[in-house]
Image (tube, rainbow, N blue to C red):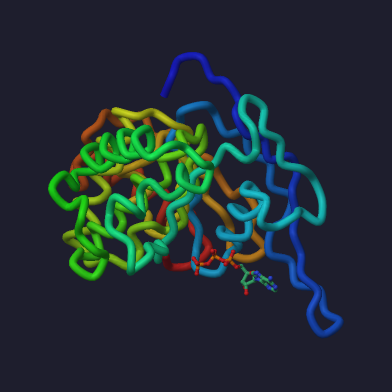
Length: 250
Ligand SMILES: Nc1ncnc2c1ncn2[C@@H]1O[C@H](COP(=O)(O)OP(=O)(O)OP(=O)(O)O)[C@@H](O)[C@H]1O
């Protein structure tokens, strides 16, 4: 991570509860996290622990019941998203899917095509510009999603289990790819996963969350050099330490 840490997003003591049938359900409880500019931050926690709710509060899709989310060094609309099931439009080509955020903004065709082409090349889809999503594998669709998330040139990228639906082989490949893309186009990434190995492979920092309601259980700085090796002794040590500290089997 950069020597000098500049806070980009500040989650200040945020909580979120839901009321259903007169009972209160707490999904997130007093979470405070400073997210630093250009860091690769991973939110790791068991299933249904409140990770998505937490991410939704960063994006503004959900409002905290308590506390606040502050964008220190960027606008709160300056966000890109990648989801587990990235909504690529089936009737649109790769190019049309990637350029869509710029089209919605009214950016002229030539300009948006140039930007989209750069990103299509960056994510390794050169040659597939005119392909339709049905012609693409799951990993390729996620590449489209990543390129589209970058298209608006956002400062902060939110990724909610983006590789969760992929087979193991493709998942490993995409983990490598996302780091390559991020090294080339540094942004602040907040990446949600319930996979410890994935978290240790990717993160500058891991925020380990407790079972529901999500609280910050521990923060791990991952100083291992990249590319990381899943079977390296140090890697395994960190992985085991996290495993021993989790609330539920992940
Ligand atoms: N709008 C809502 N109303 C009521 N309960 C909700 C709402 N949104 C989320 N929840 C509940 O909050 C809890 C946390 O959900 P969330 O989707 O954040 O979990 P998660 O950690 O992202 O899970 P997973 O890893 O399985 O995707 C769940 O029990 C969910 O049912």
